[in-house]
Image (cartoon, rainbow, N blue to C red; front, side):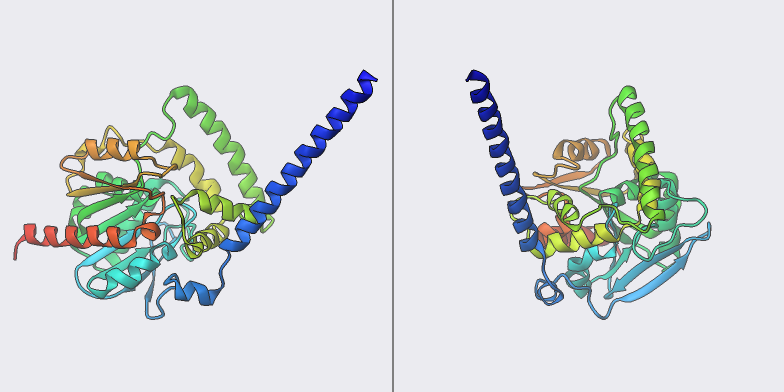
Length: 338
C-alpha cells in the first residue's frame, strides 16, 4: 500500500511538473507572438530604415568589403554596432540625428552586407576596417559612437592608431561596452577559451549547413528580449531578433575568441580624446560596474547611467542618447574654435 501511494505521489508530481512545463511553454509562445510585428507596424514605430539613406561599399586592404549607410548633412556622427547586430541598430538615429548631422552607420565585417577578407575577425582588424572606412568617406571631426562590441572596436582604433583616429574623430561616446577583461581570471580564461573552441566548431557546422545562430526563431526572440530593460517595445525586440537571425554563424565563430580575449583596461588611460560613457542601469550584458570602471580609467571621461534601461540604449533611450551626442558634438566644436 505504501509503495502504491508513493508511486501515485510520484506520478502526480510528474504530472504537475509536466503541466507547469506546458503552461510555461504556452506562456512563452504567447509572449513571442506579442513581440512579432509586421512591416507596417515597424514603419509606424519608426523602426524602418529611411528610404533616402546612401549606401557605401568600401573595399579594405585585406580583400574585405565594408557596408555603411549615410544620411543627412552637418557635423559628422559615426555609429558602430555590436556583435550579431547591424546598421539597422541605428535606425532611430538615422531618422533623428540626421536632421542636423551627417550620420554614418558602419556595418562590421561578418554582419549584414559587410564581408571579411583574409585577415578574418580579430577586433584589431575591425578597428582597421573602421579607420579605412572613415578615410574613404572623408570623415573628419566626427563624434564616434560605439555600442557594445562597437565600443570595444572604437577603443582599439584610438589605441592602435591614435594619429589616424585624431585626424578623423573629435570625441568618443562608448555605449553599453567595456574595456575588459570579460573573463577575470586565468582559470576562467582557459575555460572560456575551451568553450569558445567548442562553440566555434558548432557554429561553423551550422554555417556549412546553412543554419542560423539559433535553431528556432522563438529562442532568438527570447535572446533579443534579454538585451532590454523594462517594458521594451515589440518593434524593438523584433528588429533586434531579425538582426540576430541574419548573423552568419561562421562569422560568430570567428568573433567568439577575440571577444572573450578582449582586455584593454590597462591601456585605456592612453586614450587622448574627449569621451562620454553611457550605460543602462538594467544592462545585464555590460553592467554599470563595467561602465564605471571604463569611465574611471579614461582621462576626463564622464559617465551617464540611464535608469531602467537595458543594453539596447539606442532603442530604449532614443531622445536621451541623441541629446547627449548633439550636446557633445557642440561642445567639441566650441572647444575646437573657428
